[in-house]
Amino acid sequence: MTEDADRHRDKMAKRKAVQDAEVASKTVEKGLLMVHTGAGKGKSTAAFGLALRMLGRGRRVGVVQFIKGAWSTGERPLLEAMPGLEWHSMGEGFTWETQDRERDVAACRRAWDKAMALKSQEGLGMLVLDELCIALRYDYLPLQEVIDGLTDRPPMLHVVVTGRNAPPALMEAADLVTEMLPRKHHFAAGVKAQEGIEF
Image 1 (tube, rainbow, N blue to C red):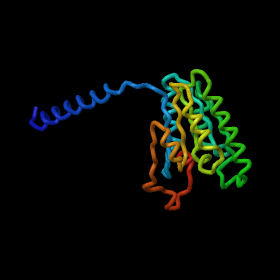
Image 2 (image 1 turned 135 degrees about the horizontal axis):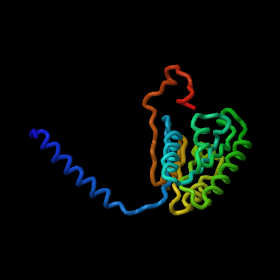
Image 3 (image 1 turned 90 degrees about the horizontal axis):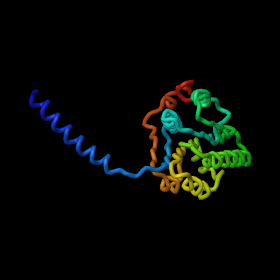
Image 4 (image 1 turned 90 degrees about the vertical axis):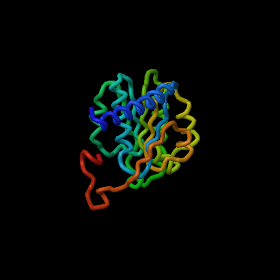
């Protein structure tokens, strides 16, 4: 074995010991409140990836889509067909499409009520609340009611909230916040939304 290989093996052995000690020090297991926010692409996609992971572990998943609903996305028919997943698209389209605040508020209220009903279902492993942050941004739902509803959940229920402009109070209540940053986007270069990528 060469000197470089010996040095690398020793370095990785030390790194492994540090990593193993760090992992062993974590003893809490609980349902997480996760927020995917930011102006970048991939918030919902990441949430649906978590839903697939949960389904792969034999746990049930509920999805409630706020705002979205009229738009057909590629992942929806596949996920809806999976055993253990319950999907509800409750929105009427993006806010600039509906242009009717009263209807948007009513749709968000129905979606929130559905989310709270799913939350109390026994054995649900994960609840994905897609674009809930948009409903909060436009004050379609009272922020404190939402935070109270999300924090008062079964101990092992994981909740994933997506959407741009997550309110600071929601991020503070969350266990994990991931912010997607738009470093570069093909849309700015004139490339239109495409099947399999944007929807």
